[in-house]
Amino acid sequence: MCLQIAIQTNHLVKCFGNNKVIKDCSMCIEQGTIYGFLGANGAGKTTIFKLLTGLLIPDSGSTEILGSAMLKNRDRMLSQIGSLIESPAFYEHLSARKNLEIHLAYMNTSGFGVEKALQMVGLSDVGEKTVAKFSLGMRQRLGIARALIHQPKILILDEPINGLDPMGIKAMRELFLILTKENGMTILISSHILSEIEHIADTIGVIVDGKIVCESNLAQIKAEHKGSLEDYFFATMNGGNQLW
Image 1 (cartoon, rainbow, N blue to C red):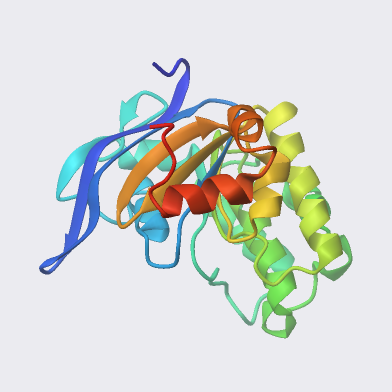
Image 2: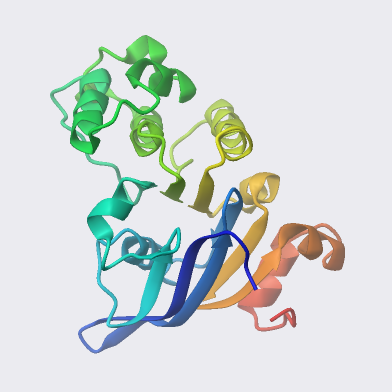
């Protein structure tokens, strides 16, 4: 049983036409932790993220965010969630700073403030630059800044280090740890770079063909798989893991 639950889904199902993409999917994420969400391309990670943020409506099943039903309280709960799902979209002709100002105005909060958010993601020196001139890595950093600027209780990040160089990856890793340890945020993060998840996650969830087949504590995984998240992941994908 999970205590102090941030995210709880029960038997989620989502179909697109005759294609059942999410199949009886249940997950449990404790507050103030980092949950590493792993799976092959097309397994359903991004669809789950969209269901959690209300961008998609499940065909059946339920989602609770901080103890409240997401579908019934979507507008109120969205203020508690920051998200980066797929490629972030911005007002291309405006500066990074202006994009963040617009987001704060929409969220009706001062949050961390624009200057601090830019500093947190390493964009302090390019705040006045138009987003159209940003590289992929800079756009990704700005997407992370926008996700966290309003100080949400939950961050949902879909491949957040995509396009970042090694220094940027290390900086974001350190930022995510600070956000949980010092700000109490709960982070749900997907990544194809297993070593990065291994550096930061408290819990690992693996989704296979639209269903979460296991949720395990990372320390337990390392103890039972000789310290290798990669071994655990491939064993799970191949149906050879017996932890669930």
